[in-house]
Image 1 (tube, rainbow, N blue to C red):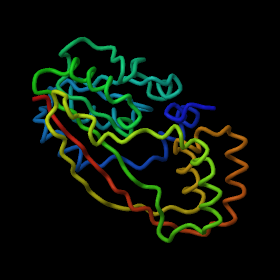
Image 2 (image 1 turned 180 degrees about the vertical axis):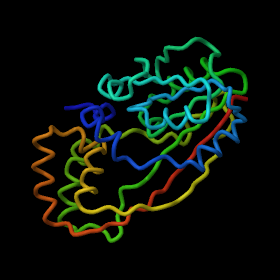
Image 3 (image 1 turned 90 degrees about the horizontal axis):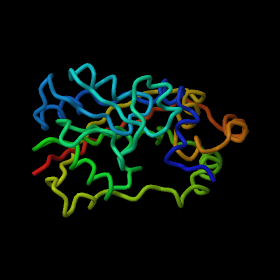
Image 4 (image 1 turned 90 degrees about the vertical axis):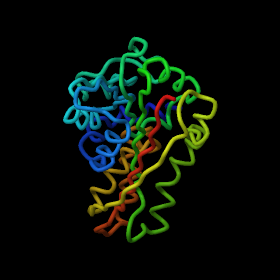
Length: 237
């Protein structure tokens, strides 16, 4: 069975092209909350294709990216091979770590120890995510049932929640901030977006195409997608 957390590489170019952009307001808020100047050295951990890296490079002079999947690194272009559980950086070498759509896939206990190692004193962590896959109006029940099958197939590979992951660590209690906006897509754009979710990306291309061929006639559109952006941030005590 494919490993769900590394499924995104099979659709890397599509992922880079169609995923909703990160909230610039929350990135600004993370920079402010973590007291990061333009000269800060920051790490994009689980950098994927570089969508967050590019945003960080607009803000900071020194951005390092680390990504475990070589297919994602091929699109990124400059990410180092490595993982949250084995960050290829020296001790106390970065002012902050950013993780976009990635932290929930980490082995939290090991990753937090690594974060404590590579961060400088009072270094910060910003976890960025966007909930986007619900539609207005809702999809027909028949379409939802078809799309749910791969999700159920890979359910045992769902990442654990990280609500209590920082308990007992050197980090302050995490703080959460949210922002909402929306985009509108047609039926084909919606399915392209869905192809970049972990359970659908884990399918072989032929199986995914066959599934979408069954789903597409059930869709009308356009669909409004509420984008629920979330920032979780903390600093070393």
